[in-house]
Figure (cartoon, one colour):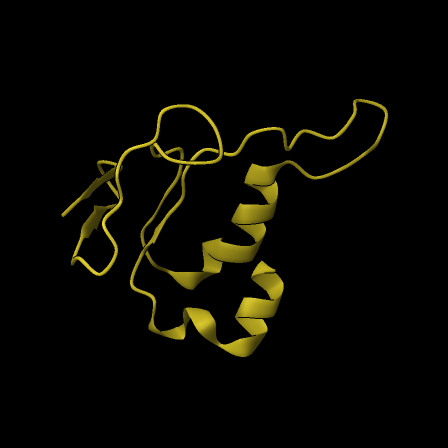
Length: 83
């Protein structure tokens, strides 16, 4: 999906990316595969924008509220997302 978004130019207007937690993404030990971190690094690292990962939201666990349509600031050095 990240590759498709890149090819469509979706990231051209993006100024930062906030990533949450990823769960149940590890392949079985006997199957060679890339990790989630490796895929994200490969697909996003050359965008030259702040990218923060492992923020407190995702598909499991307690999730922080993320208001939709609210201006936010992502501090790539501190790893903090605020609104």
